[in-house]
Image (cartoon, rainbow, N blue to C red; front, top):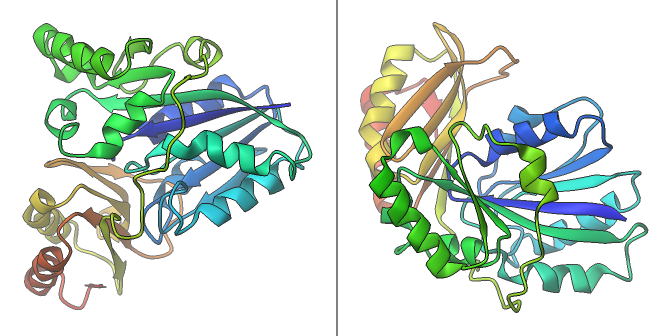
Length: 305
């Protein structure tokens, strides 16, 4: 049997960092990975590519939504024919995994090596969680159906804030195991191997075509001036859920990552064929106007929508 573990967590909580930690901890095992992105471009897959890891990339929707659920099913069946010990799945930040068991029940007669679904790990952004969970139903569902909750960015919250977060989590899922960390530096094997199946009854996912957030892709036309890119990001970040991507700048290649209003521009040693930036927002028409104006003022002729 192939042991299967699902990673959930809101945009920017640290799922990709956790996946990197998991793949390092299980480097002696034969592993497969499915990486899911809401956007057209799969940025996270580039960040976790490792030699010897069987990888499938599913973009442009949630794996639990009808929009790409068939592709998820196909990937699960295909990977069941591989010689794997573990399959780790990184879901999109807005994924609602309420129908995971329904999906697995539907494929059990089509797989070669059956899956042993160990459960899901929900990565929580300790800094932004209290203000997000009430307005984003997917976050509550991720917690309802998880077996372990990893509260990340623990260095950015105090004891009272942590207490409030734990109360919320256990109010949603009384039996969940919790871990507090920063940069996802936890005992990964303790988290993964200690997972227990969540017994909550499956239901239809809230991820639908109509509930999808709006995603915009910016593509570079030439080398981007670093200072102008930084100004551009500061102007638009307040109206986004998440911005991520890679840019070829006059100061070298960089990885772009924003969470809330926090902007991180990190040096990137890997290849960047051209600038590609994914912007995820709930305000479609307004965001289009904001992006068009900001591009015109700061990056005209350098990037395009």
